[in-house]
Length: 95
Ligand SMILES: [Zn+2]
Ligand SMILES: [Zn+2]
Image: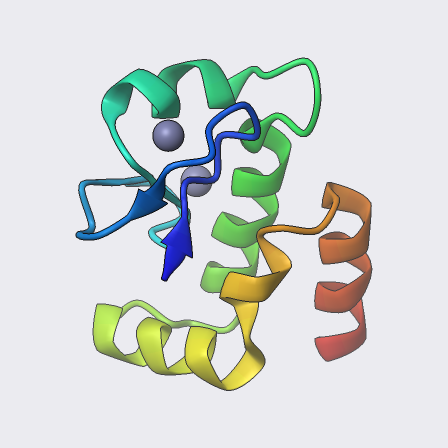
């Protein structure tokens, strides 16, 4: 079960209700969580999203099915729960 990626929210996500359109992997339970999470004081999604977006371009995972399989292979969904720095380091190691 995916958890809403807005830190203040503890609701699980039953269906893919709100997916960030730019990075395509970060999920929220609703647009009400997606908007504040973008500029949250703690772990804002914006810098993280930029990293994911760049990574996606570098790996040339234009096709969403390819991207999904890459996310599953690298367990990128688990990384969403970690800090931005942790994610950036992991991505740097992979490139
Ligand atoms: Zn939420
Ligand atoms: Zn995003």
